[in-house]
Length: 433
Ligand SMILES: *Cc1c(COP(=O)(O)O)cnc(C)c1O
Image 1 (cartoon, rainbow, N blue to C red):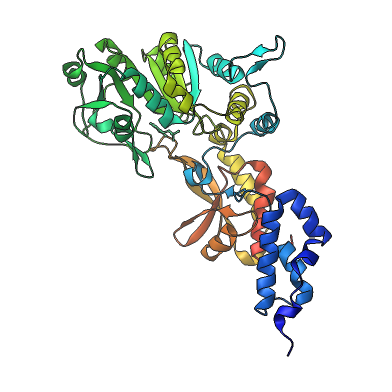
Image 2 (tube, protein in one colour; image 1 turned 45 degrees about the vertical axis):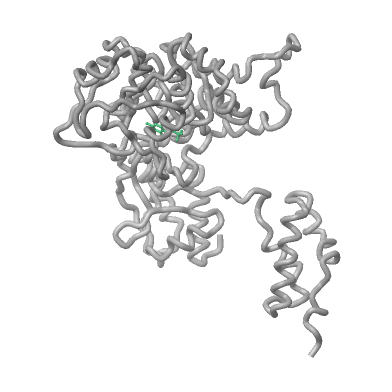
C-alpha cells in the first residue's frame, strides 16, 4: 500500500483552490490555513479521500473572522446575559457600521477643531431625560457606580446603604465589593428585610460621602419588608445616588415596580446610574444622569478616562436613544394574540410528524430587571430531543426545556426572524429548507 502521507494534497496546492483563495481575502490566512491543516490531518487519518481534502477544508471554514455567532433567542428571557443582553436595533447596527471607519467622533468638521466626544449620544440621552441637568456615559453600569464612588469618596467619606440592597449582580460580582475596591467604606443600615428612614438618619453624618439606593434588579424579598424610597432619602440632606440598574428612562406601564431615571431624578436623586444594554435596549454602556455640577466633576476626573466608551458604543447608543424602538422595548410591547398567530404560522410550516404545538408560556425580562414580572407569551413546543441539535445548528436556536418539552418562546424573537427559526427546525428534522 502507498504511504498515505504521499497522497495528502500539498498545502500550497490546496491554498490555490479559488474558494480557499477567496476565503483568505475574507477570513485572513491563519483561519484558512488552520482549516486546510485540519482537513489534511483527516485525510492522513483516512477519514477524507485525497481528492476531497479541498472540499473538506472549504466546508469547515468559519463563517467569519470572529468566533461569535448570531443566535436566535427563543428562551423567553428578554435580556439574556449569556446571549449578550439587548440585541441592537437595525438603526444602531447601521450606526456602528458607519462609526467603524474613520469618523468625526471628536472633530467638529465645520471648524476643524476638536469636538466634544460623543456629543450626539450625550445630547440624545439628555433629550430623553429632561430632568437630568447633566449626562455622561461610561463602559457599563458597574463602571458608572465605580466612577461615582471613586470620585465622591476620594476624601475618605463613607457610603450609607441598606443591608437589603447589598446586591450580587451576577457571575460572583457584588456591588459592595465593587465599591470597596475603589476605596469606599460602607456603612450598612437596617436588616436584610427592613430598613427605615430613621436608620439612614442615624447613620448620615459629616463623614457621609453619599447615600446609595440600589435596585435589587434580579430578586425580590417578600413578606415582612420595608424599604425607603428616593423621595424620603432626599430629605436627609446628604447626596443621594440611585443605581436603578435596568436603564428605563421613564416609567413603563408593564413594569410598574421597575425604577426609572426620570422619576428618580424628580424624586430628588442627585445622580442616577444605569446600564445601556438592559431594558433601554442598547449597547453595553453605563449611563450617568443628574446634577450638572456632579456630572461634570465625574467627567473631568482622571479615573473617567479609564472607563471611557469607544466610538462604536457611542454610535449605537445614540441610534438607540434617537432612532426607532429597539428590539427589547419592542418585545415588551408585544401582544399575545399576535405572538399566537406567529407561532401558528411557524407550526403550520413544520412537518406534522414533529408533533409541534402552540402553547401559552410565561416569559421574563431576565437579569436586566423586573424579577417578579411574568410576561404572557406563546411558544412552539417541540420534542425535548431537538434542544441540542437546534442549539448546535446554523443559526443556533436556544429555547428552554420545560416539563419534557422544548419550548421555542417567540417573545424575544423579532418577527422577521420567524422564517429563520422555522427553517432551523425543519433542518434538524431532516426536511429540505
Ligand atoms: C445590572 C446592574 C448593575 C451592573 O450593570 P452592568 O451594566 O452589568 O455593569 C448594577 N446595578 C444594578 C442594580 C443592576 O441591575
